[in-house]
Amino acid sequence: MTTIGIIGAGHIGSQIARLSLANGYDVVISNSRGPETLAELIAELGPRARAATAVEAARAGEIVVVSVPLKHYRSVPVEPLAGKIVIDTNNYYPQRDGHVLELDNESTTTSELLQAHLPRSKVVKAFNHIYAAALTTDGQVAGTANRRALVIAGNDTDAKARVTALLNEFGFDTVDAGPLKEGWRIQRDTPGYGPRRTAAQLRQDLAAAKRYADQRARGGAE
Ligand SMILES: NC(=O)c1ccc[n+]([C@@H]2O[C@H](COP(=O)([O-])OP(=O)(O)OC[C@H]3O[C@@H](n4cnc5c(N)ncnc54)[C@H](OP(=O)(O)O)[C@@H]3O)[C@@H](O)[C@H]2O)c1
Image (cartoon, rainbow, N blue to C red; front, side, top):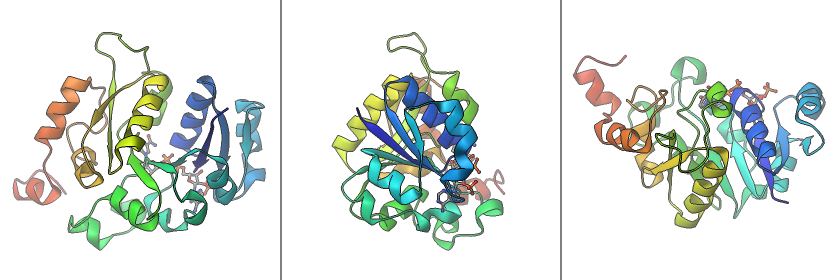
């Protein structure tokens, strides 16, 4: 049975654990404080979920989800993730994460930072623009009219195909924004960030997205 490793057991990490288990995956999940602090969550998730350290979750997962506050991305273990698909859910909130110069000047994107930290992993951006609660309420079977879609971005075609299949199992269509450097099109303060959108609507949102500098010039961003 395929195991999903999860680094970060908060709003998003715990929801991805629930979806993974509901779709037949095993789960190894971790946080910063240690596996013993996840006893309540594991009791809820059941016997196919196990709490572990981040290194153990990284080792155990065939696919590993990173869902921690962005400011902690450098603590994600590198070696055990080599060669693996790493799903990056993270967003940049300066008031939470502190200022990151390369993100403020838009010379890179959040998922490119994680990819640079994990040079031998195949990072795919996903789940960053859906509220955690909606992950377990908005999914629908493939072929449902007006099914909700989620954006992915990544530099590895095979990894994106695998994540697309996973999203489909979880109940969502997928829209591919292109390589990681295009991930800014679904970052905070873009049209597709947050609302329930179909694939066709999300494609319009991605096309209409503006960089922060452009938004500021128009007087529309902080
Ligand atoms: N909340 C949403 O609806 C939502 C939606 C889309 C994307 N996101 C993004 O997804 C990421 C996670 O968001 P969240 O709302 O799930 O955050 P959260 O509820 O605050 O949970 C963060 C989790 O990360 C863990 N963590 C922190 N540092 C860690 C480390 N060094 N190693 C392992 N685990 C670590 C925390 O563990 P401890 O509690 O032990 O410190 C906690 O379990 C953020 O970047 C956020 O912007 C959030």
